[in-house]
Length: 447
Ligand code: CS2
Image (cartoon, rainbow, N blue to C red; front, side, top):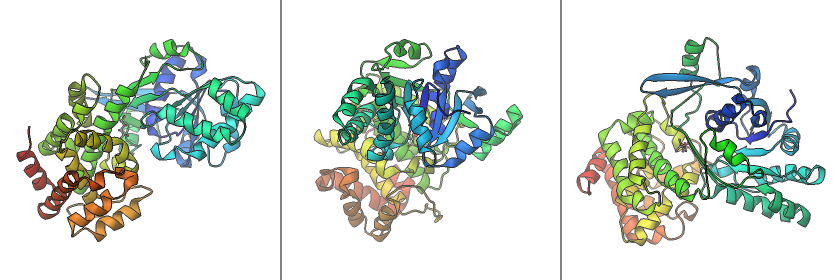
């Protein structure tokens, strides 16, 4: 199959893309608009690309809710490539005149010169061969994701030539966007359910929730795309900042806090964690008192309630350890802005301080029953070594870990109120266990 000639090239072929944007583009293709077929590019893990190729790129998505599952077969992915071994073909696909959109879900940590260089190799071919502009939509959980990617691309372009820099600045649009849908990694259980329901062995079968949201800035190479996307439920808006801020600081922040607590308690899934009243109440109060007052989304409290209901979806089996992956990259975006906003107003942010303490306990790498767990994070070894070395001395542990300015920024390590709140919470967690420490926290804070 030709790897070129699809309207969309997507970088980062994880579960999220396949149960989110790929389904949006699938809806457009079903209406007969052939421009939205996808060449899906795996960035690192070849397994998903190999599996998709074996099943002619079709896969099923189970949308699970209280009334039982609904099954969808997605046919939008029409070709696949591996960036690590087929770079030339990836560039060819992105440079092809039929390619109108590049979408990205490459995770927070991938934003940098290497990613920009890959895009620029394709932009350079476009610039010299046909000059057709395109839309590059970053869909990663980063504030100002499109703007950030544009900055990286322009910076790398300047090192190449003024003409290319001008072309990128004029012809490539980088809308900011906020994407939301809970999509756990493929699991053996999901694959077995698909086999039972659909009668074929779909090794790429996914499970997701009914809710999905894609809010994207109205800034496209082809301005008609705004109405096309709206027609299938995408929200095209002048400014995504309010949505993206609430999503990162409420959904992702409470997700990370609950997931770390779940791991420490030896619980596997998010659904089990929010089924525990104390943990649910903690997340509720964290959002009510420490986060919502500093976000600009008008319906922040209704949003909070909807999030807790979504986390409780029993069909999702979203693993706590999956959410704990890359926490060193996530915390600066998910927790720190709320802590800073709260501290600026002399608010203690006790529930976020408790979250920071839970994360420090999480870093020790074993649950309260003594079983070791593993998670992936470029800084895991360094963080775990610090957490273990200072384990018996909570105050030292907090000083060492809060001192990492790449995570917490320059001011929090010297904020005595914040530091003491975290240290007190960590000391209590270590002395009494997480749930008794949390109960104490709930008994001594405002409902
Ligand atoms: C989660 C997100 O894994 C994580 O860190 O918080 O993937 C979350 O499920 C999505 O952002 C929901 O849209």
